[in-house]
Length: 413
Image 1: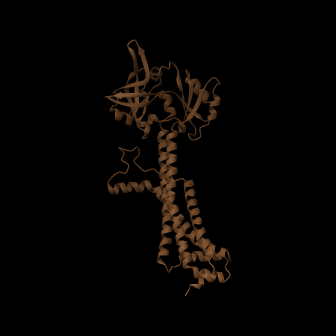
Image 2: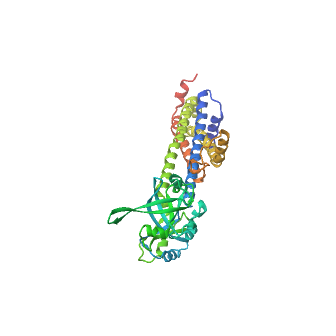
Image 3: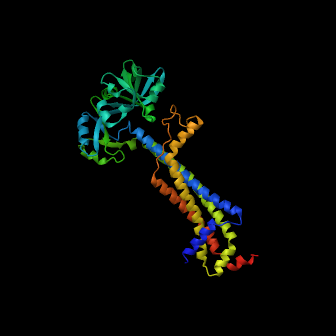
């Protein structure tokens, strides 16, 4: 009976009418604030997860899952690739040469990352060939000095298929007339667009041309790999290489580490700030319970005179506060999950209604708000809301349990 009585009275206090209208308003406000806080946190975390997944998907269209780079370079990249392919997680390999340079056209200069590739082998490692909007990477032939540019890079330089650009590398050619920067004229053979930042800073050329440009002779820097699972790169595959190779393995997550670390940090900061809404709702629960304790002093005195212990009285107000908070958490979780799941459609309907685009396709890489609902985020947010709700009841319930019957009844009419 002692375990059921606090639950019965506490829930009745939640449903019952109060003499003090302000008390009902504060209780309603705490319920709404808790629901809104939980919903907002779930929706924002889902949208940030969506952006994270969208960027990773787009980046993996052009960035290999992993790269094996040999410190001194390697002459026979096929032998290196076959040795690495001995690991069961490696599905394909392709050679690469990588360096930095500056592209110039019509008086405009842009710094770029230059990658030398073998077109046929590259198509097995990345999906860059599927994202060419003009031309094709298969047009890259050794000795033709063709180049494939990202769409934003080509637009900023004002070039298209057939136009020429000057590629300068950070090396000097020493002649009797003096030292001059090394440069070479390339012809645009293709333009790709993956919808990520690489569209603005990546240029592809044939690896034979890159060997001449960077004076590597017959060597390449290493091989690019396609693995069975891009999110579980096994560094043990380096064990397949002979001891004389001084090689290192870099996964796509490491090469793009700063970008994804920034996204992770942003998610943590935004989540912490939005958790303040849940904390405000918890303070509202404290305020409503303190007012409730003052209003129910006579009821508490009667219960105490009938033999109720102070702990039983405290449990009544713990039940009441938890009921308000947990109800808010439940409503917030349901509303947040539904909103996060349909937020793309909601935004599209809003754009059609208002007649403008929130994400203009001509300006942004994406045209639809991405969202990816993770159940672990839902569990963390709901647990946080319930924890705040329980903690908010501790002080008011403690005060209620310390009320003495004689003191409470002394001022009653």
